Image (cartoon, rainbow, N blue to C red):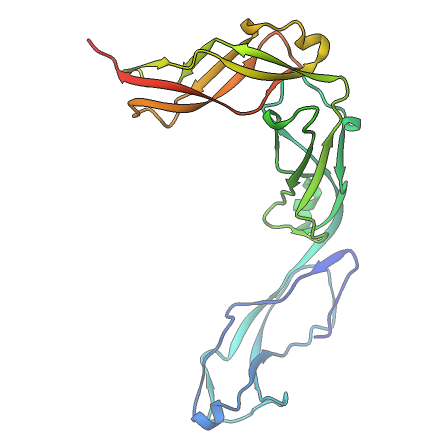
Length: 271
């Protein structure tokens, strides 16, 4: 008791080196123990984490200290930590996976709600943070008709989300973008074990390509390649269905929307 927090800091719940203690002695006297607590007068405004060791005191149900030589505690003292963290309001930002290399989205094309959250954390960590990143958005899930996403707020493990906002809504402005269906006929297999051969039985896939209308209108099947990655399947032999990644060439601002699968057979090379 007796401590205050500087308004620019967050004071967390005290933690103890032991959360429980064993009381032993005559059964009648042990039954009178309602709780065991720490009494410690700090008497200062905290601006950094406070560490101290304090005596444990037994109390009865009425809140009166119990002083008797007949009772013993398994620990007479406990180490206490009162965490004190800096506070700061930081903007939220969004990152992407599978985004076309040439596509540059401006800040006016990305709306995040809420745009900021209040964070508590060690001062050196907060000073190194310019923003708080959301869980990356996968561009294979982005299209003009599917452009609003709920994404988790990612914080360093040493920080706390004081705003208690676990997710944020990211809206992408894809005005001027369109979709076009193109048949993919070119399949490639990568990371195949050198001692094996593969046959792709799927002959074609209809892929939805997203991009500026003047860019995707010029694309043909020759611009799309469906890649099957055998990483982690090096020992596989037989027939299976595998996910494919469809790459677009000759269109730096375009990408393929959706998930696709292909049938493949793998066998040992002979002779």
